[in-house]
Image (cartoon, rainbow, N blue to C red; front, side, top):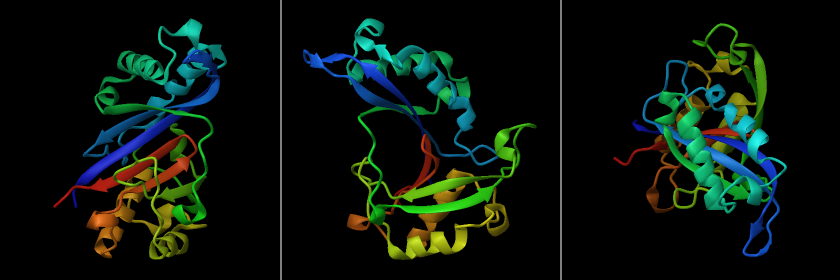
Length: 229
């Protein structure tokens, strides 16, 4: 089944600024969104390591700053424009071409409600990576599985109980390399779960396929969306 792979990389900063003549100091989260139809050999849209400089730039230029003095435009739109310009100048060529959107969130991001997320812990390692890559080591994650609303990506849909049962029974407490027949990247996990839902005949409102998002860390996520037949 064909579809679109999407990943997100987030970086946070605490800022001061003036918005509409009033103090607009806040916690700001910057998010790079990248999309691809095909994955790299390891199973990535791109290596999240190629996006690590986002947090470094945010730390150096935006964090704990008065943005009225740092940026020509300290609004959300101004921050987006600044990060887009930075990305065009600093991301590797192959990664820059995948950049689809820069998004901004203000305030603390709420944790998803219990009925709209599945938490599981598991271990893995990834193959086909350069020597010394940290993801090639045996390590673990506290995973989060959610279903973004196709119409409002910031809204999460309730998780069907059958999906919750499959995720917890197959993955929780496991070494993913030993229970899956593929390199267990978050992109691959999202695609497998999305296709499984479709094969079970479970759909979102209006009969549209679910999109499954898998987060390995608080600052990264991957999701897969099936293309319309």
